[in-house]
Length: 329
Ligand code: FDP
Image 1 (cartoon, rainbow, N blue to C red):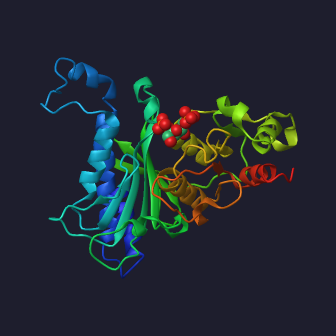
Image 2 (cartoon, rainbow, N blue to C red):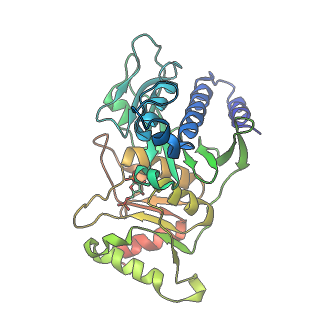
Image 3 (spheres, rainbow, N blue to C red):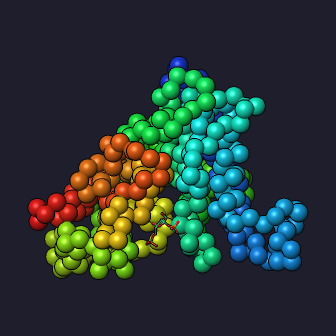
């Protein structure tokens, strides 16, 4: 089952579908292949462009994150499905060029998540979030983007790891497709992903411990205590690429966290580009996404690049974490 076929079969469940949404997902899968192609030869870029910063095809050698940003924009700008885009790499919204038609959807994306890991050949990813526009017609506006995550109509990520996997949901289950470069297609490999109710792994940058508040310190202390009945002590895994840490958490269970701290009360991760799409996916897989006080998906965004603390994972793990953060344990 290819991703293309899966998308079309999903579309058939909606007799009034215009095909716009399927077209949008199709364009995204093409963008994913183009980014994969570049990511997979990242180690060669400096060799190919060593003399004059030009690569073999004569293009200026670009940084991979700039390349991914432009590639996704260009793959998505002309399909007529979108009225607006916003990317983690750009301060303002990205309009559709005047010579292309506009549509009813809005796309927000993080072109290359975990970019500090690129040079070490460690897993990186791309993340996307799709909303229906709220304005009636014409060019989209910032208001079309600033919707709470609960209104997403689709969200997904592409993880460029030991293999490349496209994971997405439109609200009908979370599905993963592994890229087979020999046929040039994403093939269904993880149908209807369900996150375990409780896991045995926690994932956090513990180097920030000294700046944490009491609640999170106590919670991490609790995870390290020994208690066989609850699977403790938990193991610690931290890649430092959110997509990678979240993907592992989705499959194995447990909790991924980026808490606020004394230096950065809102943490590091962006609500619109990272926390919303991942929380949407986790909730549709039976998990939970929280800022410690509130469901991530219910936060009303005020600006495109705002940040929020994130606690993402198995339902029970996130609930226990919230109890510690709220001082109830
Ligand atoms: P990066 O800065 O390498 O792009 O939000 C970006 C992000 O990576 C996440 O992917 C990752 O989870 C987090 O930052 C890592 O931050 P720390 O280095 O502070 O742990």
